[in-house]
Length: 452
Ligand code: UD1
Ligand code: CA
Image 1 (cartoon, rainbow, N blue to C red):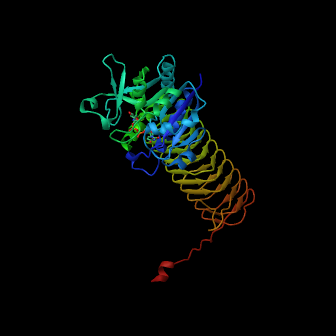
Image 2 (image 1 turned 180 degrees about the vertical axis):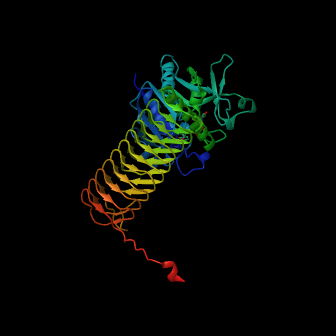
Image 3 (image 1 turned 90 degrees about the horizontal axis):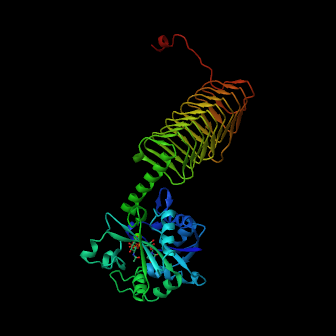
């Protein structure tokens, strides 16, 4: 069986009060819509048609690997599906319909749901969930015998109907031909003046078709995001799940409540994550590391046995055995070699730091290629920018750079070279030479007496 999917993502998301289209707001560091697409693919969908409208340009720039269809005016979920009619003229069999604002759906749930529909003779099946708080959702009204009757939107519901906690999750399987026949009959005579997709279920039922109801085991997986409060709640559920997955795989997380790990992050076993730590984007961390407290890693590649605390590192690589922090900023394009020690108060940008080098206090290193076992004294600065252009600094293996040195790039310091403290180096230093570039000290005798 081939499964095709329609994902509704054209709504403005008025209740978000945002310039960003709702479906691009992030959960677990990834746009909600991307989570929904991934869940569909995991459930075996072979084709995803995404209905876009509000912020369409931005959605198309952000999301790839799907087909897009424009819904010029947002006249309701039924109208949105109708916009995709042309894309399904060749199709028969089942179409899965999802909303772009239900980011916690899992492939497993959708797979069970579609399998249940396929093995039934229903014209359509709707996914429902028992919500602790059903506010805002369409309520599921059942017949006395428990079969499907209709879905009533919150705004159209009576007080009695509002007490129902079984909600429409906004996930459906339809026989594709029957879907579009029924959609042609949907009217907008309701509180919101919209064409409601769930009305197709009542229309099909009225035509003598059977409508299936499949209730999700974990209601959390179906929550829909309409507001920022719900966004935060979904993010929390997502992150707890991610933390639990990592702990189950052998990662120690001291305080899951203050650990924020994005969905695609990978962490090796016996690594410990301490509180107030953010691990974001495309980051991988090896085994036996101690990360945190107060770390933010974004798009980082981190080796094994790395110790890092109180620091921000992004788009860079840290090799095995590095000790980092407190208060280090590693900026894009940097590779920190194995067993390097960096911190306190150090910034490194677009540089390569060789194995075993030490940058222990108060340095700025930019556009630098540093060899191995180099010792950089406190307060050393690479002067990489002349106000117009950036230049590189090269420091050879085993060099020793005295405290408070300025290295005015472009400049090369040879292997094993020494630089006296307080030097401003403007010329290359050959291998094994000692460079001193500071005014000589003058001691003036009886200075105190003369002043009298
Ligand atoms: C919808 C359902 C409700 C269900 C809930 C589940 C309807 C009428 N109501 O309500 O029964 O409980 O989802 O979360 O379907 N969209 C479009 N074009 C439009 C309108 C909406 O593409 O013209 C998209 C939105 O971008 C969104 C999705 O459809 O991704 C759902 O729309 P939304 O307005 O959030 O519907 P709800 O009020 O949550
Ligand atoms: Ca919604």
